[in-house]
Amino acid sequence: MNKGCNQCELPILNCICNKLPKVCTRAKFWILSSVRELKRPSNTARLLKLANPDSTEIFLWERTKEPDQLIEYINMEQYKTFILFPTENGDFDKSDMELKIEDKIPAFIILDGTWKEARKIFRKSDFLKDLPNITIRPSCSSKYDLRRGVTQGNLCTIEAAIEIIRMNQEIQTASIIEGYYNIFIKSYKAGISEYLFKDHF
Image (tube, rainbow, N blue to C red; front, side, top):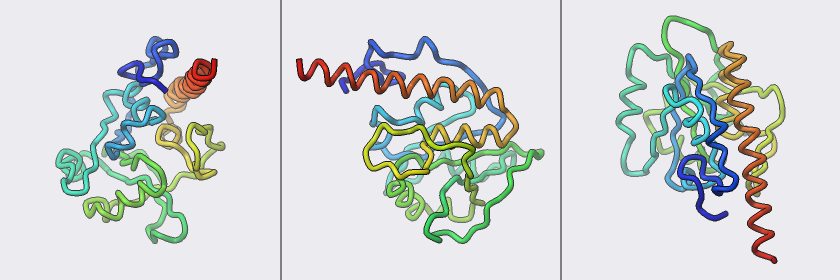
């Protein structure tokens, strides 16, 4: 697709920024993403940041440079930090932890990208190794079908965040974000259809 809106990244004709909700979740979401992933128009971490700006931050993962601000957050006493990462194929032996509301602010690090990319980020980031792991058991199947080779059953970044928000008993907020995500999916596909039509006629 051609470059479009600077915020939602959709073509101007399909821009959904006028439908953008603004929410503020109790939980914090810290997205750790590669440059490659952030540049993809189909990236959904950007949507979460747009809809939940005060509780979502995106940090760039680089092989030779640690995200100092994220590490500082992890070490702050006010947060109870978890890493969201699927425990597929027995790669990780940490137990799932039940999310409980407590005095500390729950914070979730989501590794943004494909399974292969997320695994690489985890393996090469020592500052993540001692964090408790949360594994989501989705309440419904993923709607994300904007890329080839997506592993069936895996949630995209914003879907994972929506599940966590529900776990944190913010049901209405989760529904609001999910509604915006649904609009994004439809608009993205419409943009692709328009591009292919113009390319062939």
